[in-house]
Length: 284
Image (spheres, rainbow, N blue to C red):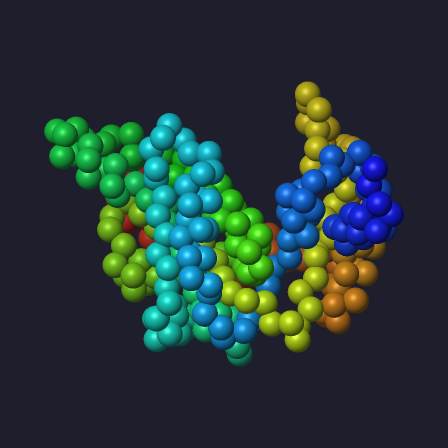
């Protein structure tokens, strides 16, 4: 029988994940589920090096994720050189950001997760083929999905050994410059980055609340009306989180609208299609 302390810890996790919204009451608990629900993005790191074997452990986990057709269409560049990390931080910094992604330079490692068709493209052409399938959108999407599956599995592994991570979509801000900086071959691009390191205990990384499950969970048919209706309870949890984290007051719905209409948010990603087409992807 589960002890009261354990139940209290699990209830606290659900409270952080959903705030004062309705919570699922039939979670099947185990240590792995608790670890996943405890995920939070870390943006302040100690300068300490990663434990020996940490990167290899993360990649072993990543290679254990599901992969499309056993094709292995992703790669990782682990950036540990301080000068190169600083250069990548500068490339991806928005013009109106004073600090930019400071944690890129703060943490010991930046992992660049690459949707990578280059190996398979080379093999196909070496075998006398044309690799025509690689010119289609589905191949681009397949490699990108596999990259995300691998990265998230690696993130879970990192957190299980006491490390923290934060994803960086900003690595797509200047896709061409990033590719040139790390010498990427054609038919590959950096889908996103991931900073990895020891969380700084002086900064409290908090769990961000998510909407109730009914917003995202549908059975048999998509219920748009219910999904939008259930979102009404999320605004309060979003506001409470920002207040407790001493963040600027902002409504979630306003943020969504701003992101959908502001090219400043993209930070150069509006040129992503051109950048990946120049790298060989035709996106037919």
